[in-house]
Amino acid sequence: MIAPLEESHIDQVCAIEKVSFPLPWPREAFLGELSLPYGKSWCWLEGDRVLGYLIAWKSFEDFHIINLAVSPEARGRGIARNLLRHALEWARGARAERSLLEVRSSNAAARALYLSAGFEVVGIRKNYYELPTEDGLILEKRLEEK
Image (cartoon, rainbow, N blue to C red; front, top):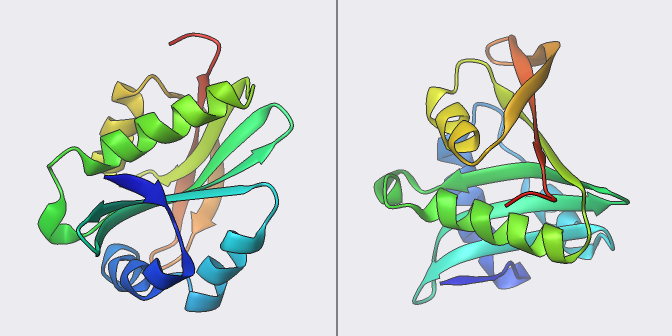
């Protein structure tokens, strides 16, 4: 079930973050996201267990996906796809015209997810990521089309 991300979920989100990324966000960053007026955050819950999360910003006509991860044992079940679909539907309803994100050029699973959802590569941020240093691909999806 998709639910708004709440402070009570943050410890579980941090645990997923730590096993998903080489430079995980600190707890304070997630807490900060919850208070941003332009921030939107959701999680996938099974009972009281968080299995995935998506953090995004709505700024004028843009909807920027900032962070998306799923617990390793729950991957391959469509959780990321459902979180992404939910977020993009929310963005359309909020009158966003496009969604943007950055992804590691080597992250084949994430790239496949985003490309299958209609995102297109529109640019490269050289040396955007660290540990290891790597380019980030800028992806965009126009939201007026479904």
